[in-house]
Image 1: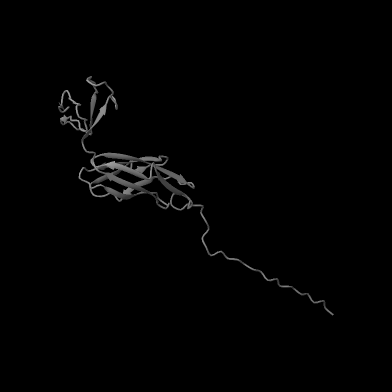
Image 2: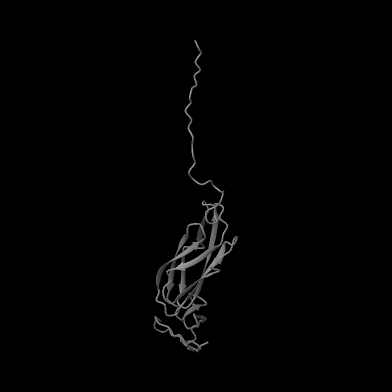
Length: 197
């Protein structure tokens, strides 16, 4: 009797990769995980009509992103010039200035502006700024006395010095008078009118 030889067949699982092999490349300029953020020197700024103002801008790069960042600002009302200097930050540069020039005819009010930072391969970052435009300060003047109280005997005399402070470019003449005097008391200013400066 012949010895039978048996061959056992083993199942073999063959895995075939249908995708492309990775070449170790990056997405955009940040490896797919980089990011940027933008912050302001303050969340609010108040500027008078016809005046100027400045806000600091800081850009932070993270996650391996080192590319250039472009800065823009939106939401400025008509008559207001908002300029970012510089508007393009090269690699390694993190600081910029947002300069405002407020037209003299711009109506007072509050406005919300958006500062946007953009870089290739990363999501945009934004920061919000509240701009309040205040009325132009009006020319005026103020009076200061050398003493707030004066005491003297009946029949005697006393003197107080009046200092005139001109404010916001006021240059007109100032006339001096006194009210609320008791009977028998006389006040005389010398001079009674002070000419413009």
